[in-house]
Amino acid sequence: MVAFPLAHVSWSIADNADRPACDRFFIETFGAETVFEMLETPETAHMGLDREERLMVIGDTMIIPIAPAGAGAKPDSPLGNMLRRSAGEGRWLGVSLRVADLPAADAWFRARGFQLHYDPGMEANYFLISRRQALGMRIEIMTGELPNDPRLREGWNPGRWASDHPLGIEGLQAIGLSVPDLATARELFAERLDWPEIGQRHIASENADCAAFRMGDTVIEALAPRDDASPLAIHLRDIQGIRSLTFKVRSAQAAAAWLEQRGLELIGDVTDRFAILPAQAQGRLLWFTRNEVPGYPTLGTLMCEPAVMPA
Image 1 (tube, rainbow, N blue to C red):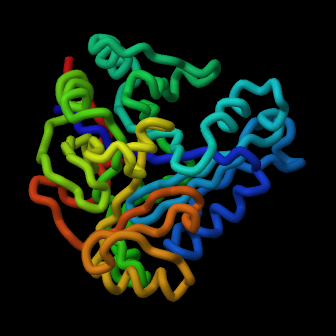
Image 2 (tube, rainbow, N blue to C red):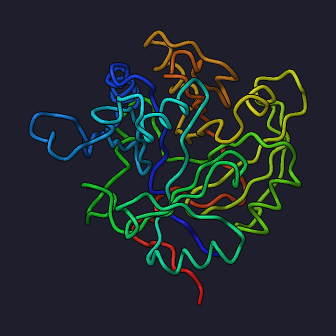
């Protein structure tokens, strides 16, 4: 197995005017810490930026909402059109995974039948695997460092989100994907990507059969709906791909009380596993649970240990 550290999870916002409210939600509700901003300003105008984004960390997890801006706001911008097309409730851009050597990663993924895309000018930094090749989850394979990434610094302490913030977030437990069936998920994740399956169970809050695969420092939960009319089944039909994030918290009841004090409506079982109503969470499904899952990796980041591809 090659353990791929999760560099970030991202999603798009069609109108840049809506991005500050999204950022504010995560800062005020999750205690997200801003580590870098890419902004279109008079000072950066010469750079020809086509998007704006804020890199934020919640514990060891980096999230990035991205919106078209500058050249990206023009109707003929390829990146702007991609972001606008990918925006909307329940939609995510994908994940970014860190590797030590990009050419070695290129060879590894091509040997497994993946077609790779390089953005012009960024050939030394990352390549992309399209959503259609990975059950709706776009995968970015990156090398190097993200701007001002605190997880690479000596003394980085994500524990304050668990000890000092009312949500008590201990870490990202899993990324949930809507999939047509578990056999298809196993063919991709276990066979082609060599991410070991570490468990199968029923998840009542999604009414889904779940197969879990260890990506590296987090888990991909492939969720196959049991009910064709369920929200998960509708996501699979209309969107497919990343459906949710699940955070492990110290106390589900304490986390629920904090969110309800902020006027947020919750779904699920507040004594066990629950989520903020997506319409109140910038269109994202964000689960919280106090439960550990047998076989899942210890919470924490491997960003200081980029994936090394076998010879």
